[in-house]
Image 1 (cartoon, one colour):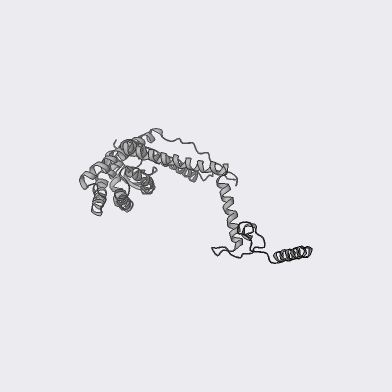
Image 2 (cartoon, one colour):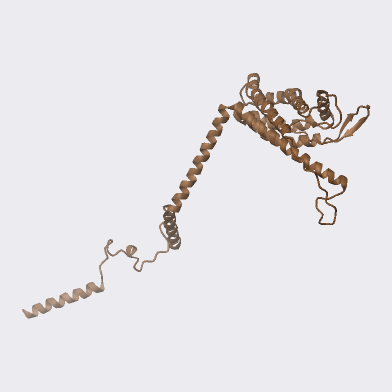
Length: 325
């Protein structure tokens, strides 16, 4: 009996040693090396990327996720959405006002544009007058180099002239052009944006309205503002056409611009677009009107006089010699 028990214990010990020497396959749940990272080496993941890249990618994802849910990120995101909402609201409000109040918009935009252009022109005249005074006296604005300093009397801007330009821009350039371009032209040529319709509107605007209405009205308005005769206004108009290339410069600029106006620009933004472009047209007109002019004095002699006031919006300057007013 004792020998049998001893033999059983011996066999049990041998089997235990064998089990320790040859362990069975670990379970997928408890002994998976992938879960516990025990002696597990893998060069690539399932996508074929190196494990180092995968580790960096995982870290970046965790960092991005934590930053995305941080208080600062939520504040920045809400601020951006608020700015977008305010911008969208402002654009909608402007578009609605431009659609529902076309004449008020035209008067405000063109009036402010004409007033600003005249203000710039007056500042330019004051600067030119100061430079001319310095050249006549041979002085200098500073005496750092030992030259005599010349004091130039301060000249203020003419407020009444600026108000006159404001009224002219609001009434004629604003409301009148709004009526012509958005009511008369569609009735004459249609509302389409086809090639024939656009070219018909542009041709009528350049060959008829510009020559017989727009530019003459500009010269007449200037005559009323600066108190010289209507005859002199038309003489200046014809002189600019013949000798200074007024129509050539006008057509070369406003031909392409009006093609864009009647084909691309929405109807309620057309006068505003024209007002913005015309501000640059003033620079061209200023260079035309600032050239010397030939006039006839009371004795019947032809005299050449510089035009001290540059022409703004197609308008000429006040004459310094005696006219029949």
